[in-house]
Image (cartoon, rainbow, N blue to C red; front, side, top):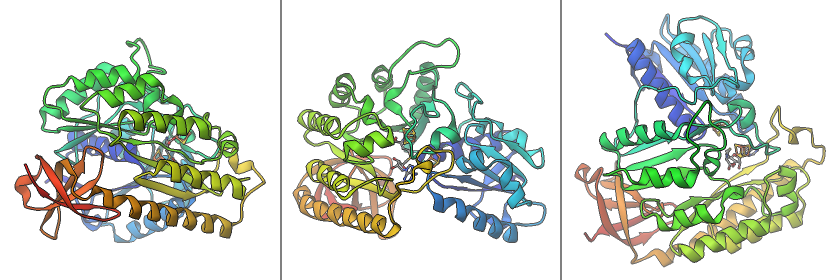
Length: 433
Ligand code: SAH
Ligand code: SF4
Ligand code: F3S
């Protein structure tokens, strides 16, 4: 009988893909199959995130819980970004943990599994051309890593310390993987990296120099592929060539994640983001003039050290000008190994919380104002999920979550849907074609 693997994945899409790689490797080499019940698992893995403080505390309480419920002889492993930065300390604090595997060492899962108390967290390890075995959690869309690590040094961010320097995965490997995913039935590809539009910055070894725009062109030639999405692009690298490819390539979905972080040029400088408020707004304007239907999402941090009321109003001002469809907003959280952790001009907790709720209220106001404009529109929707309430849901090209009454026959299909009801999070519609 095959062994059982229980895996919990926190954090970003890159972690989701890393978990898929781990599942595939363990299945191929050690005959593990997935279970949703940690109590029956032979191996329990947590694929961790350490971008903000809270999830780190949660990790240790969860580990304690898993240690109580696990069956006799079962192993526990900690993977991902917190594994990278805490390393050996995890085993010191939770001695029942069997191994620690960093976010940049995923390909070593088969080794650490059989070496009790091993810790593999080298952030210089290069697995950019490792051919992982294949596993995909969705038959409809495929995540594909196009780069590992990050070369930016945003002063608040721990990621470069957990995932190491940026290396692009060779274009021919990406193309092969994309081709295989499409042959396997995926009609949508989701290209992943911390800095996708900086693709081609550095390859390990001799590889053809290809930039992101060229990579998009090549991938979009794959027959049977309908949609390409990607995350995260960096506003600094949104040059005209890239925006034009985005606008003119019909397979690229017309939704763009544009992580703003702050609307104040002063704060952006302190964050070392490499762009100003004006540059960001200029890129949005250019994008909207080329693709009027484009929907934009963003990440914003409030209460970064030194953020004055005026700086915060600049952020609100950008929100009013851009009218994002979706905002992921966070209160600044000081992280070890980062430059900003040393800054002394920190902002009071309460001010941070107030700013966060002001921002979220403004976002709700903007959504409520804009969402009615979607009534009666017709979107092509790719159906991916069966809902418990008799609905099937999917995404429009510009990333609206759309639900229609229906059953599993719709899954994996495209249909034109006319929007009949609107809400902040999802839309309801009827199939017209
Ligand atoms: N590479 C992506 C971001 C990855 S981290 C980019 O540059 O946009 C995801 C998000 O977490 C960031 O966009 C940021 O908004 C948030 N984040 C990162 N570090 C943080 C910190 N120290 N405190 C609060 N939020 C943080
Ligand atoms: Fe972090 Fe900045 Fe790199 Fe994004 S670009 S992962 S925020 S250092
Ligand atoms: Fe978290 Fe690591 Fe992603 S810190 S956001 S899992 S890159």
